[in-house]
Amino acid sequence: MLENPILSSGHPQTDTYEPVVISDCTNVKCNEEIYSREGIEHNGEFYCSTHCLGEHLINEGQAIDMSNQ
Ligand SMILES: [Zn+2]
Image 1 (cartoon, protein in one colour):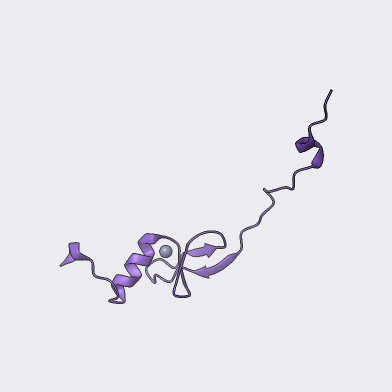
Image 2: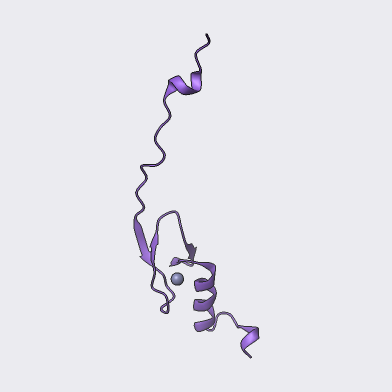
């Protein structure tokens, strides 16, 4: 019987990763904790979702919500 090289080499465990909080969401209406490997970084600031990124840009006047005119 042939030895299976994949099984015998021993896979590194991938489920032992522990997420680390890297920032709070920049959107003040949200303030959700953001873990590494998730969220969105824009100009050095972190957001938990595209929704919060958009809301923050609108609040800052950097984007305009055309549906709210
Ligand atoms: Zn958020």
